[in-house]
Image (cartoon, rainbow, N blue to C red; front, side, top):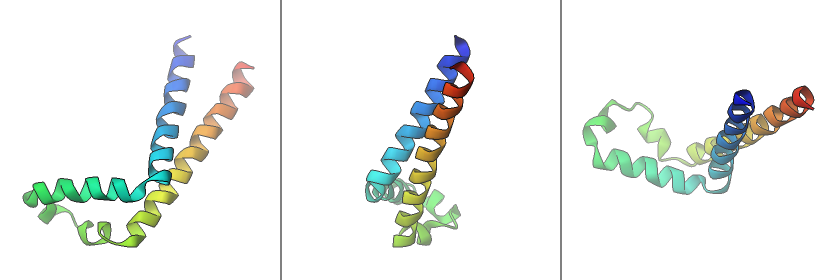
Length: 84
């Protein structure tokens, strides 16, 4: 039973991150850039800050979202195969 809870939590986690990154990457970008604008000391330490402001960052978020959704589906498929 405990393993099933872990499996479902993994599926929910990957699915949630996947849907968020795929459906609203600009919103995630806005949150990340807002964090660094409130913490300029941390912004100076982030070598990716310039890239985070670009459209390729949004594309990367979409790709990460698709990979997370694929991982959720894969874990679900394995769970169905193993636990039948």
